[in-house]
Image 1 (cartoon, helix red, strand yellow):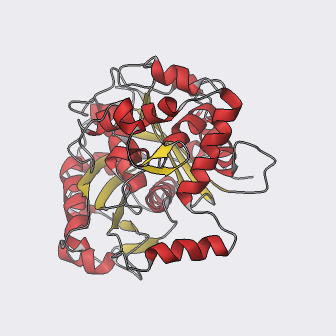
Image 2 (cartoon, rainbow, N blue to C red; image 1 turned 180 degrees about the vertical axis):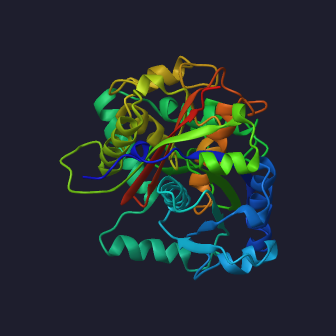
Image 3 (tube, rainbow, N blue to C red; image 1 turned 45 degrees about the vertical axis):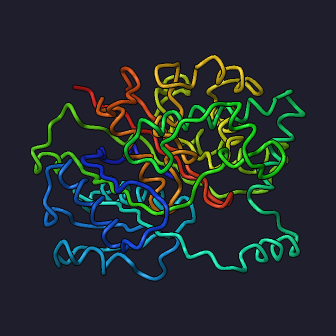
Length: 384
């Protein structure tokens, strides 16, 4: 039976950094990644030579992009491992880094996510048709069908789905790293260009470019850095699963989320009601409704009511996607999961300027990769 992260030595987040998420630009990925790593090093009070191991996550860059990037920081001889796990690449890199520190193999490890979108070819529209011809369904159609099923089951309205995007776009407007920084009203979102079914364009995430990094440390690593203890955030648990066969009308994404988050919360010894901040995979608005219910944040069918009442707002019962989520923060794939870690770390430290959830102590990061994998982490502000 797998051992919980808590059964090993403690693991802490010492530093986080981001390059703002944005549309495709001519800027090389190397510059994006270095900006995030350097910000994380400064945040931790570390030098590149202090880092013993690196995990580099990307989904779009091809073979081994880490070395051409990291050589600009110095040829220190550290171990470099590349991670590709679709949308969960950054989350998986963070998990591997945490396990390396927990095992005693290293005291200071960096997890980095960086990506740039591939140039869209003229035949992209035909490619979607090809997928449909092979008995597959495109992502927006899949989630539109889940939204319709949810509406049929619980009486949800187009405004209920749009309200997710309105909340997250408002949060993103307060986040200097977010790709989308313009708030929009529920009525405006409902009336926007349709994707499929209830879903309109503001209810899906933009896939752009960006980078994120997190430096993980043992207690010895923190002492080496002379790290300020009151800024310490501990990684309580890390859970990772892949999908299996489900007899579940809520969809395999939701069933997989329920199992993975249940594992992460159990390993951390934390109840859903104890979560103060949650960053979840909201590539489409319906996912927030599905996942908050399956995480145990509310009863089935109750997410629209709670959302409308402000329970998932910054300052509400639990701040869901205070960063703006994938819908506003953006979804550059490789960095996305690590960007969630950066947001939660800042929230738990009380350093999320302009979007701080009051007295945040415990947070959950959740990512799904192509529906096939799910990774979840529980972080907590260390006792002072």
